[in-house]
Length: 367
Image (cartoon, rainbow, N blue to C red; front, side, top):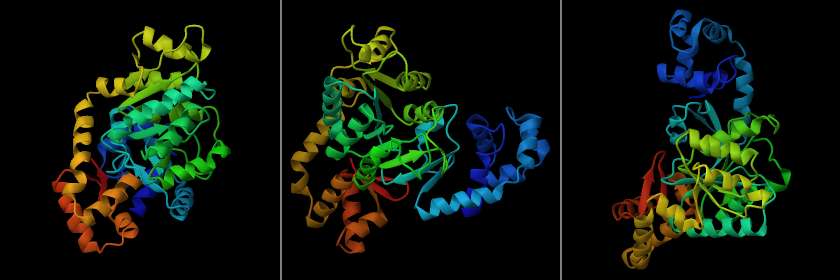
């Protein structure tokens, strides 16, 4: 794994090999190492690669730099996710330009059954703040993964409300994981990770939050979700870029309407008027549009009878998963005083009773 990680990282550094070309290569070869060790004549024949890019791959020699990145990854317990990894956000693979490698810190399951992005202006109104909080509270019974960009305004409100509602939330960054931008959100980022969320980026260490990185970041926010919710935005800016990207990826886009005279609602109103977003008044509108009503009813019915059906060991695990969101078997063993055999037995029973869901990577979460 360590060896192939060197080649995975190297693939992101080859001149003229961007996400589109890297995906073509990853589809063609079993491993990243195989890409670099393939004959030049074979690489040239791959549609979209050609002579110049094939030559770039064969002449690449900056492998020691990748070792330095791996030292950083290991020191800070970062999880690198290559295109072909099981834990890589699978929804991104439906996009034409998925990141070749993602760097992840956290525990949230990036392939949760429901993933929603919440975006908007950095200078929200009180109305915008209230609506973000209300919508996320109404979505809470579904336990979606809430994704945003850790920016000021709507992003931060969405992350904070998710933590408050015990919903896992992930911040997608426009820089490396060696810093938090804005620095004022360092504490928030720590809270998100502690609450079962995380931080995700395709940028390596020492990458600064330069202006051109944000549109690149926004495609991840749009692509890894089932739906994007837009709360207050002008006619231009990052939120509108994200909404247009979500449309291009055939994702559902929802927008909160506002006064026609309010500049902060101009973007939302435009998207609604041009049929590029569905008008919403609450989280219940999103639940209805996405066809999630039956799951809400099922969840409510399960809650009424849940503790009648669970024994003491199962109640302990239920409360732990409710608090943390999703956990690996190792994290469950670490956080729980039960014996490993008791945990295994309880998890099996709860899974058979459709109380919990088993996820890739020996992860578990409540249904």
